Image 1 (cartoon, protein in one colour):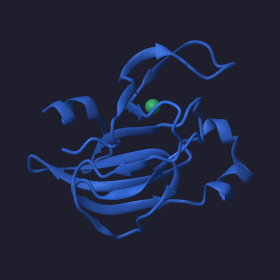
Image 2 (cartoon, protein in one colour):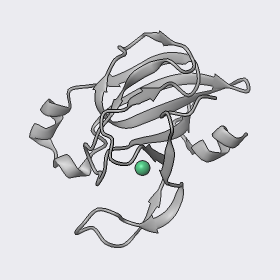
Image 3 (cartoon, helix red, strand yellow):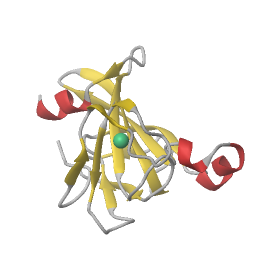
Length: 147
Ligand SMILES: [Zn+2]
């Protein structure tokens, strides 16, 4: 497993938290992990595991035309990765730029894009989360990373 950001700081852990977005106070379940490098936007994002790009959402500017920019995950990349024999969809969200395309095979540690302060975000960061590929059931990225 490769960390998604160099010199990464885990800026928000999985679990219940106070919503950090101004004007959206209240408890929310944060269903992934946030990594950032404080004060640094546009840092490279690395594939945590090898896999195949199954979704490449990189038309964020278009997306902003039909949704509130602060209520989205910005650009994102989804990679199907096999971990301990099981296929997962790993999502990398709040990307300013995606450097991979649908169908690309990526290696563990390959740069797949750069994170930014886009979508529902109050600082530049990448949000990573995970689903079982067989049924899109949410699973813990923390457990996958620590397993
Ligand atoms: Zn997050």
